Amino acid sequence: MRQVVLDTETTGLDPAQGHRVIEIGCVEILNRKLTGNHFQCYLNPDREIDDAAIEVHGLTLEFLADKPRFPQVKEEFIAFVKGAELIIHNAPFDIGFLDHELSRTGTASEKMADLCPVLDSLLLAREKHPGQRNNLDALCKRYEVDNTQRQLHGALLDAEILADVYLMMTSGQRSLLANEEQAEGIQRRHKVRKLDPNRLPLLVSKASPEEYNAHQERLRSIAKSSENGCLWLSLEAKS
Image (cartoon, rainbow, N blue to C red; front, side, top):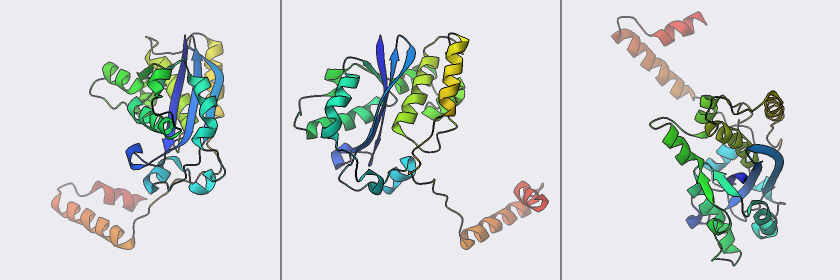
């Protein structure tokens, strides 16, 4: 059984508003084992990228300026995924964008669902864990999958992490590993996961002096109205 875990990064949230795919990442699973085969590409979207999207994935137009367009990688991408079961977290989002990219190449009748069956791992997680948070970070914590390299989203990185989560989630036990050799392989793979060095660092917004003063005034107000004072102020005093 061949499966492909897939993730994308995009310029925004809605292809109907002209947003585009800017990264595709896929990893292959064969008979429930990661083969090490993968497909990854960055894409020039020929349009601006929303600031909120850049904060998520760190990909800028400057970085993507010399990257190929989707039509240039289409055949290679289809060859990698065709016939496999796609595993995607929140599949309608990624499938909607990929269908949009296919339609722009002049093959409007061609859909991802015609190429591959799709399994939405988010729906699977919700069935297994109703009423709980089931985003990828929450699942990593629940199934003890290392995601410490995930400071920014990246399509290939997230596909690798989702592959481990999916195997754990469908294994029927708390360990996704069949033997120690597989365990060592997973550990080695997690240690070398790194995002592209050209990506922007995470943005850190610091409080303005006005915001800081308003915060302090609020803490003093809490301290006056509480019999036990304000814990935050006492911790600041100790530090």
